[in-house]
Length: 333
Image (tube, rainbow, N blue to C red; front, side, top):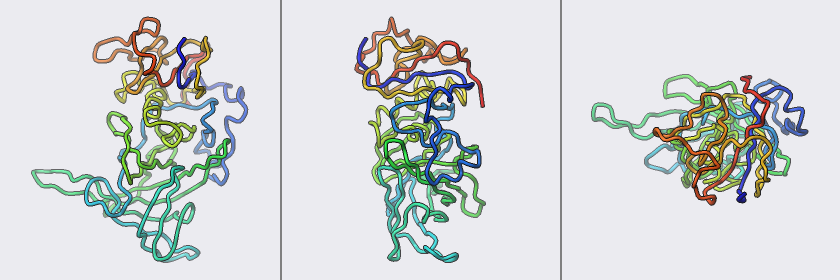
């Protein structure tokens, strides 16, 4: 068989599988929220493999990447920022500049102070959307984002990651969870945008995308397969694969809590352990042999996706593969 860049092996089910792989639930340094039962998939991400829980939530939020230069005149952007004064219970400082490291740590400077990590808990940012037209009039909606929690993540390969919990409100309203699901935490992507409708991934300079870890985009970063670890093309293909989004149309064909055994090998073993599910490219599945769940939609615009034995796609277009392990059935948590 042809060599592939990556290989994802999908185990459908929940019972007992975590016991089969040591280190699948490694603790996260500084992540106190782990004890609250909110999160079960933290700190796995070395990019080298292991059992994961997939999701049918693509993003778990509805805000695109936004400019963080504090100087942009249009588009989704931050227009103001303030943070608590370090070491004091009251008072704030105005933030003059923001930046984001490749590992997703937010850095802020203002009034002679340089802040990062937990120092930015309580920071509030003015956010404006794209102008919208109503009855011929244009305007930009004003929102506020606030960091309410932070925890660093130490991965098995030594790479550092950073978890943030954001809340959001419209001007005059009250704060609500940004990610809006039972897992409120997010990882931050630098210079990267994900289209909210198509899930297309593209470069966006001076921007930040808040990738909720309850969604496929955030989960991939947690696993060590984010834009800082892989190409944007591989990252986009990975989002479709996690969701079983065969047509690449933001139409997940899996169930929340389905376990995925992930192995980012540069060569796919022959034969694959289990039954081949699909081979994936930038825009979804290039071929499908065994859908991840019964009743899954595997036709795109009325045309069935070919089997992998009969498909004539270019092997160079393959970015990863998935295989269903016989004997498991999907179970929601």
